[in-house]
Image 1: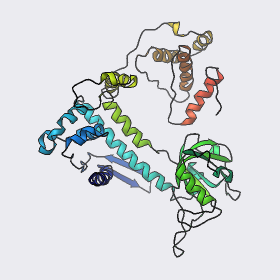
Image 2: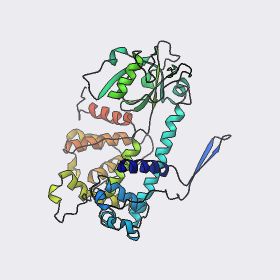
Image 3: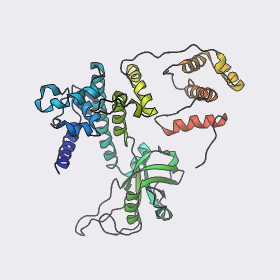
Length: 416
């Protein structure tokens, strides 16, 4: 009970601490100009570290906790009740210098700001009608009905697929795949223009927003397939089948809307990546004098050796290193012919990437052939037996590169 109470207090304080601090937003509605001023943040009022250190030593979040203590400049040595935490703080943050702590503090705050803005963004979407938001932003799909055939539980799996298509009464005929949705997009499912009764007959009928958070599995001109969790699936099925709704009242003929959630799950991933950047090279805390190097996995050993180098490159901006190479990297005749067709700047970019010991950046104006160069570099790496990861802010950009690689026969298209 004591632990639960401490968790509830901490959750409440963290919610307040994550609110934007030192941010001034000025809106000029006449000229439609928004200005944002970033000021020094006021320190969040986080609770002190609990006195018993034995629990902290075994806690699975002691790594994150000590990083937060370093961010807030907590001088544990000056606090009698926290003197026993000196070893934990030194273990997880003693390898960081002032510049790295400042970088950590800055990005922790920026993630707070983005998370706060993302929460408000999806809420703003519901203040507009689905038809208006679909026509102006392309980030909403209106007037959807659920295909009844997809409402049967599919082998009782934890993730299920639901098919939705345009209602016959829809006021728009825009093809769904012409909107800003693609495979993998995070979306929020809500009722659309259909009010769901409240528990009491005396209360006004209302819609349900954020009925489920889902991911798009497939999309075409008239239909969209979304993946949802089992609990959300059962909740949706109760509404569609006219069974027991969340308010225990049946409803028929419900239409739905999908709103794109550009920031879904982003802040938690960013925070975890930030923790890994600063502590992935640090072993878990132990009071034992014996080394645990032998118990580390191969991946943990790689991260431990790589993390300091990443911090030097990302935080201290150490310049990239390059090896000397010859034309031998063009191991394939077709690659050599395609390389000779590139202009001098493109050839230099290819050489830089292939000779890079750590990383290389390619910059260029739109239309200068960056995508073509990425495709060619991927082909070269594949020919050299290297593994290639292609990632982008949008799925469409990745699909574009993969399609070009398929055209060249470097990869094989696989069907689900």
